[in-house]
Picture 1: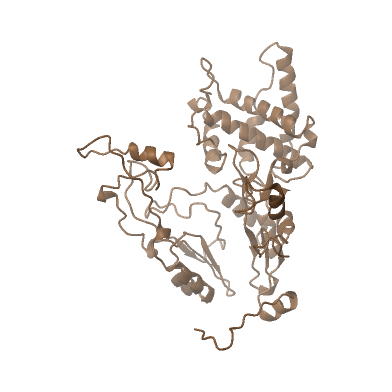
Picture 2: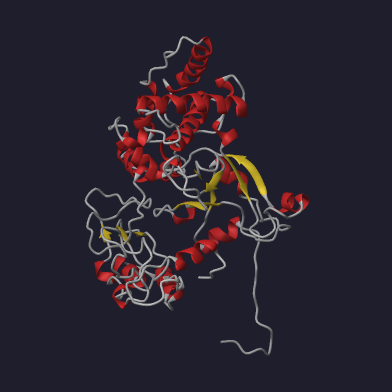
Length: 458
């Protein structure tokens, strides 16, 4: 890695070594990645397309090297399956009691070299589980620590919610699956909202301004009392409550964590922080509740939660207006689809307007099934979203549906450059016929490729 990058240069300058020599020597920093190792991942994709049985599916998956995926299987005989493929290097941790690969290792010591890859036979897989359901949402797929796959599993908020929805439904239809994809319920609100409602908002001082501020905050907090924990965009009660709840969460993560973290590593409010706060709420005396930026004052759980409630009320008053009933989550949580080359900063506004799409008001959020994620350290703008949605009807493949995030053309002047955006935002899907006859009936656009006469083809 180039030492033009300041952090890399500094890391190389601080590299520890027990070897004798000039301690002022600097070290190169290198990065190993399985994606740079020749593999047969493309062959795996072709094999998956031709698979007719679960055994064929697993045989093809063996060649799927990088990036590691959650591969799911279903056939018209009623079988469902799962396979975790990928080249996972076997290596020792750089520091004791840390996951392999999480810290830089001393590259001059061959003891830290990769020792091959996890055998495919050891990778997690399943066929026809007893409960008849397979859910993958980046959660941990095995309780076993061996073989080591990763420490970066999602903490399971989305997977749990999907499992709950499926259990409630029993028999599931394609329409049910499409509805689950748009589920905006925030399971973490079940943990945080009761704690927020329990915080005393009585004035701690006789100062009338203090009393007015707390009453001002109480008006906003009351939105949470009858909230159903969904996060829609609009002006209905749930949209106003979702706006306030997420503003409280953003301010809470800043108050709780940012005073402890270095610049550049501010709390993003994602699934790890939800898990941490869930634990901290059960430990009101934890040192994390103390704001290190307020010397000679030791805050506790209730004080930090109260500050988050107050700051969120003031923030939304500035951003969305004084009346909480007018607040909308979608007015904060917006998505602009930017062209990767022509849509960014430094490009003339007219060009950006032509190639970008949005902004669009979006429901959902981080660690929610409708995973329109946002970074609490930066604001409420959508930072990641589902690139497509698909529902396959194995009883009638021609009844399957699909929607793309933008369109199927990368050319801004093409009709299909962004013709799916509005349907994708609204949660609508489009017909995705499978058989040749059905495709010909529904798609008027046909592209025919013919080799030039006299040109040899292979």
